[in-house]
Image 1 (tube, rainbow, N blue to C red):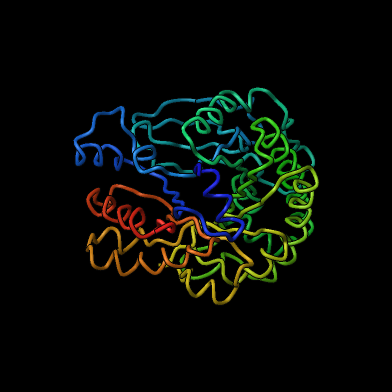
Image 2 (image 1 turned 120 degrees about the vertical axis):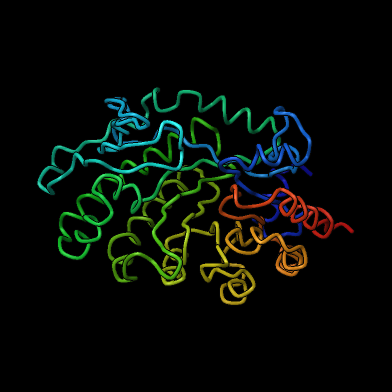
Amino acid sequence: MTNKNLVMTAIDFKTPRQLPIWDNYWGKFSDNWREYMNFDKTVCPEDYYGICISICVADESLFPSQKKIIKTEGEYEISNDGWGRIVRTGKNNIYFSETVDHILKNPSELTHFKPEPAALDLRFDGFAEKVNREKKAGRCVFAKIGGLYCRSQFVRGEENLLVDMALDENFCNDLFDVMLEHRIQMALETLHRGDLWDTGLFIYDDMANSKTVNFSPAMFENYFLPRYKRLINEVKKAGCRHVFFHSDGNILPVMEMLLEAGFTGFNPLEPSCGMELTGLRKQFGKRMVFFGGVCNKFILPRGNKKEIEAHVRPLIELGRDGGLILGQASIGDDINPEAYDYYISLIKEHGNYCN
């Protein structure tokens, strides 16, 4: 059974031969891991551990032709990032980025705000090659676009957008409509160019903190529920098999509406934010597929093997009936390679459902 078969079997709530896994490695973890394992730079953890999923995204910015580095200031670059904003980023620090300016300063300027076409070839430089490379590596590949909230706050600024959502409903409706049309076209073009209809689409829309969503459920119902219904309807009508949702943080206050919109799977489901898988399965049954569920904030960084096993074994058992691709939001420098290797060994041993 291939990784794609494992993932799609789990999505269909059938028992996979082996519990599929999906982790993303950040910062210096891969280098630290290679040093611990005594591997050279040709070996990567994705291949060694058999990571089952890859997410492929095109350049979905509103104005990709406007992207450019404006100037360099010491260790920083000032650039137009294509989203209608000027950003300062660290040349040697991928974690540092801050917005310096927004093009859309006044709501009245929205009438002149027209995204460049989704079908521009420059959006897809190297995209098909990456999709093919990931498929050849044996991973189940999904398309990705950003969501309505997070991409709109790229344009407006998060604080400004939240104030707008409270005080200027007409402007927000116009802005979200512009973003919706662009999201639909980017989704369709990305699915088409990658020929990813048979797996599906992930929509990344970080909208929550560790306690709750950044705005009220009433605002979600007003602004996002009808638009996500339309987006999902459009891509499924075109042949997209599945549409899944990503947001860090606690999205429980809007989970029922996300399900109503048509999302059927969620990631990363951070237990440190109240998104604990056994409780979610009791509450929502087989209405939702889980992508994630492992604690990368406390349990893995502490590196206590007994604690890791006590955390992971019930999740492995939960995956026996399908509906789970185990993993976490990210694997970073704070996680010891020995602890991570032990975590994976538990999955390989106890997540082999043929035994």
